Length: 126
Image (tube, rainbow, N blue to C red; front, top):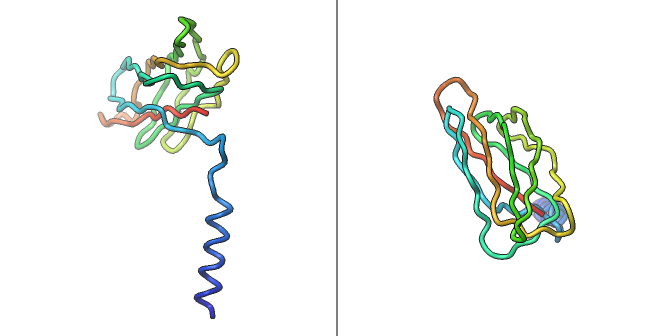
């Protein structure tokens, strides 16, 4: 009887944690070294999004510049100049205009653990 109750409770918790339709999708990732680095995350195919965020894993990363480029030739310079710790994300960045078709996101950043390690930055969009 207790096993059935536990399984039923687990099923209810899984259903409650189901991902809504407008959930964040990872659209790219890059490894960051312990020096100032410039990387570009290319977004394949016509994919339209309203907002993005960058999440950091393993070690802290200091962002200096983030530029979003659109298929129509437009460009958005995003002010992110901040140190983001592992397990944290930047603020949600609203993209200019309606659903925007991103072609690439250019990043200038560095890993800042002072131990010559690397970090991973993942780009999410919705």
